[in-house]
Image: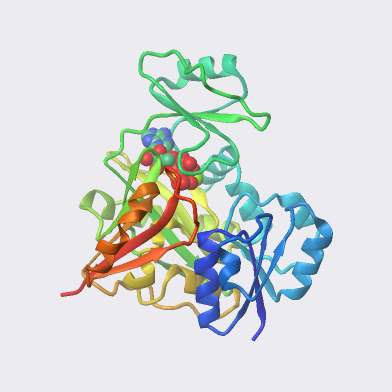
Length: 349
Ligand code: ATP
Ligand code: MG
Ligand code: MG
């Protein structure tokens, strides 16, 4: 078989590598981290910085196709590599790693984000808070995940003193009064075929995904069609290959675009046991030019719970539950707010 390269060494890379291996591919991981968890299940791994052109060139030469499990891989060094068969492509990476660019991109394709304004310092923040209104959330344009790099501003005004304004800027957005949250997980094949996973209802705690539940509530199912149509237009516009995820707020006025991830997504982990073909396998199929697999549910109800921080220590109880599928990522040190694993329960009747 041929070799698939994965940029990034986290749990998403590990799950992609596992799916690739099942289909007979060899996997090579590229990550700046020594001993990444994805490297444990890959045949080869390269430990090098994102801007190490020579290392990237060697990596690209060994791989028939290269993908990424992490949207913050710098674009410029990748653009400098001639023969890298990157799927999804650079444009998807570029748009999705900048909150301002992704909101504009979504609007250009008919999506509705929360009201927002680009902000680079305290003065601009105060102006944006006046024009958009409060409460709201200030988010760094780049690098944030799991609610990091975000500051909430109260209804009564004064922005928090702890705010840092990075060189690369921030976006201030109005607080959305949503009924619930969901994501659209699509997979686009090389020939342009698009399949969708059922949208789960996503519950967050402190900005971190805690649980995904299927089927979702009616508040969500009534908005999925419109959200899927936007997702398909975005995928098409990016000439996208692989799994693309878009997070939405379900509101009275319809689906509000939150953000996109040019990759497999935590809110799709349930698909390993809960769908006929997992998001990981379908991503691998897509980037390898293979036909996509069935995304149908394998049960009547599927629930995925993240094991965050100390919660990961209760896994003996989970193993005692015959319906529970336990995934521990092998990250080592337990830290508060760190995603250590997840558990999926599929009910069949
Ligand atoms: P992820 O780990 O999903 O990449 P992130 O750090 O990029 O997270 P967001 O998705 O922007 O963060 O926000 C995290 C959560 O905070 C959202 O899922 C939602 O629950 C809440 N949130 C974010 N923006 C808003 C908003 N404008 N109005 C209301 N709630 C919001
Ligand atoms: Mg995000
Ligand atoms: Mg998010």
